Image 1 (cartoon, rainbow, N blue to C red):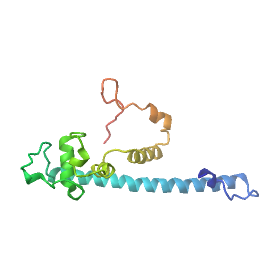
Image 2: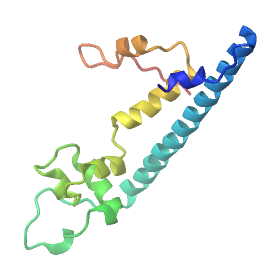
Image 3: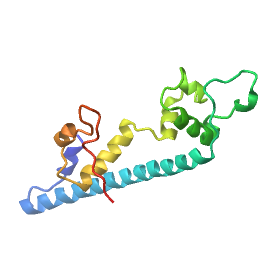
Image 4: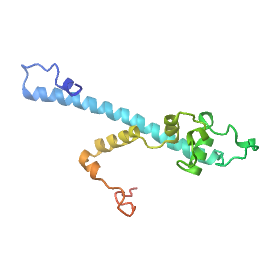
Length: 163
């Protein structure tokens, strides 16, 4: 197992304090690596967010109901026209049309579309929560499970404005 490597190859003849120090150094090394990976992923999230804000200003919105004779909007969205794809998505919202991925010209590639739109996923949430817990060690898994962002009426209760 992964956690066993922290304890591997520690000589039996050394003092307990030295063994604890070796284990602590290994753990700190692994935590630093995890933090670095998460920071790289977090920076990617921020870059996509900034890019998408620019796309909202520059992109052309594809109408939901196209007249088949109107060719102005053909080939206006897709992976090669992300500015228009992002603008269209944010203009119409989630699930605005049946076969929305196809409408946005991401045929069968919902994962890439979600990434480009910078929508939350378990991967991005894991990055953010890992950084949150590393920054605030008093936050525990049980604390996160009990964290209520909204009350029964839909009002924001678990948010705090800072800055």
